[in-house]
Length: 254
Image (cartoon, rainbow, N blue to C red; front, side, top):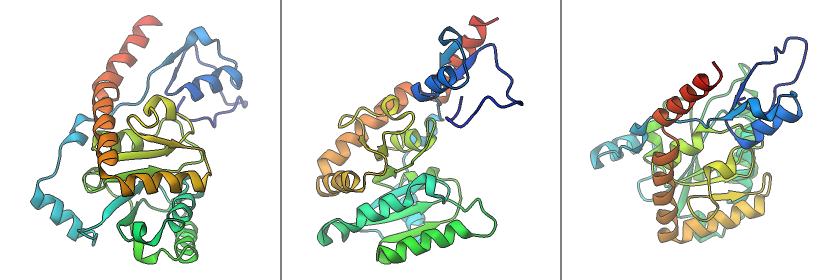
């Protein structure tokens, strides 16, 4: 169960067992798909530990130059396809409300492409940037391997309206970013609020603005959350851990 959008239609074959990646997808399998809780196993996503490998100073500068990013700003990343579900509008609106001196310290980087061939989502994003008067604070990078970009970011925001167990959050945590995400699916398993990251209510612009203000104004808090987040990701969300837990499920249901 990857995300809460599977329904028991005619072509849905009910499985003998289910691997759920979050508490929310587990509940979906029970409540919407009618699975017995005894046949559902919890295995969160895992990623390669290479995300924790830092760039050299020379590589860091090279990537900043490659993407035309400022060298003297706190970089806020949002990695995800350009679509309303991912909440780009929420981040832009929250950033707009920050005091001018705080905004001037930061720069947002949106990494992702438009799934629509007609480019409507890109037009939507550019319209939002113009509406919020944030043109000078935003760089959009089309879909690419985000691994080196995480190493450039100080903060990663995931303002999604719907998720399952987003890899973006744990990739950023392992890359030593301070992560702020909505309290949607997978949130409380990934992040303990104010300990190894920050959570805010979905669609709550003011709450996100307040969290951004805190981490943009307090470097020690930002680094403390990044340290704890990386430690947690390396302990709980590696590909090796995921593979071992998945293998154990198959052994149990033989």
